[in-house]
Length: 289
Ligand SMILES: Nc1nc2ncn(CCNC(CO)CO)c2c(=O)[nH]1
Image (tube, rainbow, N blue to C red; front, side, top):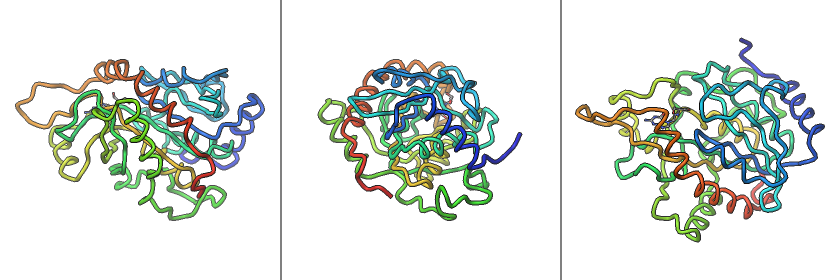
């Protein structure tokens, strides 16, 4: 398949969407595995199936609906991805991150991403929310980076800084809102490490990632954040700890997707309330890059 996505393709997709909806979103939300209920929060929803949107790939993963939902959250115009794309589905990486550039061209200023992840930090419990304060991009070390290839200055610079990838004001906002909602006892801050998948990590890989400073492990989000930051959007990301990664050889636990989706069901309501309250408070003009 074609490896790179052109500016014109992103422009075509954005123009197609701008023509088919009156909503002009300033906040983009990506729903992770089992968290698609977040999209049901939007008022006056307008739904597009990924397969109907020019240049959009299709979702192939159970728990990822494959719908783009426009609407408002407490009066704020939003666009929400019910289902995201992953390297392990075989999509070229620039197809995975195409929605970020489309949202940028539509005027989105802030991205809120959620995912389900395995807990490496032994203090974490299944059902905890982990605010992502930084990431470790394992595929990136092997040259799997959505910005590889010619840089398009219309989106951003050739060598974008990633030390400020996760917006600190939005992390503080998440803590403030969680405290008001009484969620602080299951709210964490941590480093998210991404692997390619689809196979879950081995015990040795979990121990290595934990030793390298990672608190959780997943198969998404980092690629979207890199492209969103490159384009100057503010990013907030949070993991639902859907299971504890297997860290020792005498454990009988086995990571499985069903468990990931079940945990999503359990905590989806709280994630919905936290994200929607945050979105209502986001000040769009703050810290524009
Ligand atoms: N140990 C472990 N637990 C996890 N829970 C969710 N994910 C993120 C990957 N999610 C996949 C499979 O559920 C679907 O995208 C993981 C993971 O990668 N590793």
